[in-house]
Image (cartoon, rainbow, N blue to C red; front, side, top):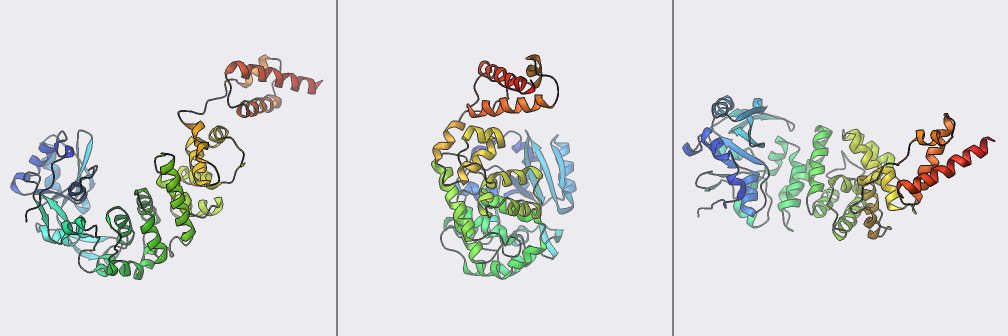
Length: 403
């Protein structure tokens, strides 16, 4: 039976037809592949577009330039060129076959055999191609049926696929969380468990990237529990345990109940033990940016239990305040209400204004300004008129103390 990729808005984006003409789609030299086909068949939004082609990558560059399409050699050594149309990046990769693999990287050779290219991919649902003109789907390994059954399977032998690229262990659970159903493929899960220690060979950046993508999925809890039960992360993230999964589940419920957009980083903070030092150490191990590590630490850092939400947001920033209020299951969700449509203001007075009121220049100015700020925060950020009154009182207090 012929399967057709449904027509959708993304297929009519400006410049796409010109790109396909340049790649010889009408001659069978280019097809949509991977996520666009998978998500397109499911009726999901297609944000990232990949095209597979029989053309050599240097030929791709020449053809795009001739068509006045920007070509970026993002991975030309591995056969990938990024074409940019109307600001939209499209990855174009020459058909490949693996010559050798070591679990971290592969030595590849180019091919013009579509089945050979499909056979080196990880899951059946990722090895789907679609003709851009006829929309006919090519499915070598039963990926369409797996999509319909919400079944995630490796192509061929699961142990062999994982041995080729250890990252496929983490990718398995990410795709399971997004596309899989309640039934887990026993051979795939067993292969992931058996090879879990091989994750130690991967860069921590790749592990962090996959874990963050998993936590960004709408419903990651089932996959996370399978990972903990199977000891998948034990070698690289021994801090993750069942209690962490429970915290993620509680956080997700609070995100949903408060209509707060989910955050993968907030969920990562929930997944890790609620200890600032441990969280920072894990962030360093995963080679996260200083900004990201700071946000994770602030999310779990203990603070005054009676601190007003706006005072908290002023002290740690709006993003971190929301993280902390959601992670603290003892705080009612109504604590988020004062932060809606509110932006932490700047103190509407300066040290110079205190000097103008008669406070001599020196260290007392900074101390007095700090006291003004403290009262201003405690009074829930009143306007400049009230701050002026507070400043008069504080300056008088410091002047009396100097007498």
